[in-house]
Amino acid sequence: MSSKQRTIAAPITFSGKGLHTGELVTMTVRPAEAESGIVFRRVDLKGEPTVAALAHNVSDTARGTTIKDGKAKVSTIEHIMSALWTMGIDNAIIDINAPETPIMDGSAREYAAEITRVGTIEQQAERHYFEVEEEFVFEIPKKGVRVVITPAEEYSVDVDVDYNSVVVGCQSSHYDLSVDYPTQIAPCRTFVFLHEIELLLKLGLIKGGSVESAIVVVEKPISESTRKRICKSFGREDIAAEKGYLNHLALRFDNEIARHKLLDILGDLALLGRRIRGHVQALRPGHFANTQMAMQLEKKLTTTIQ
Image (cartoon, rainbow, N blue to C red; front, top):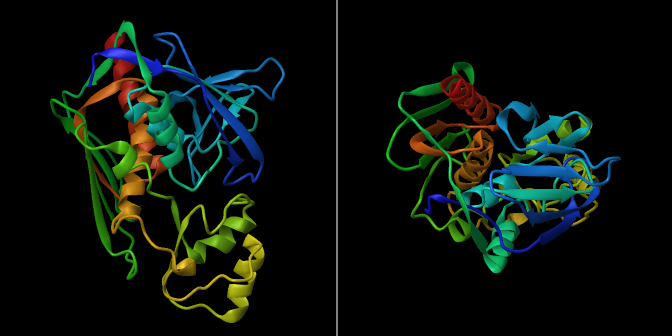
């Protein structure tokens, strides 16, 4: 990867529903000057307030990563951050007219495709790196969550997941600079277990969800009454819920769930605002663990600079 900073070559626009709010949203990624970083601008709010995509601005990690600075708040940023950062974009301004990014098909595939279509532009400024010189660990032992970063010459990430699921099983995924992100990681969709859906709906979440925007894991057959409730929630009458994946969904990869977790952690660790030279080993990672690790690195970086 080049040592120079890059921005997107031309604006790209995406429209759709927010996964949790269900609001229609239009989001445009625009070129930005060197040293700008990635910044979201709420164009629907008075004064068009901005929030930088940095770890210290993380305000919530419930089923997605939310950043907030004053009145500017944007949720579910991990997919667009994953695509921009992993595909080499250091600087961009993201205009958005709602409090949440569009979920698209639950992956970063369209984001990656549009970035590929318009390309990127090299800028004069040098990239900033975080050289990992010691081990960093964040873990939640009771949940089997552990994220470790150790010294390495180049950035790489290994993800392992095991949810004690007879359907999902144990899955692993890997990223290094030789992996083609647009074809191997970006297409992997978010997922949820069927038993979680009704709870999420009660919490006022996944209002913009659909059977087309997520992998729904079905651990065991459900009753007809439960199936009808799920159908009503998604505004569908034809949902099949046998053991496996809801509506007989075909996976894009055998380990698509692990690859989506990899997609997420690439986006969340981008909130450090510097490119990492180190190896990440993540066991059952999630947005809370990912962003806690990013905050830990950010704190170390701030101390070092001072």
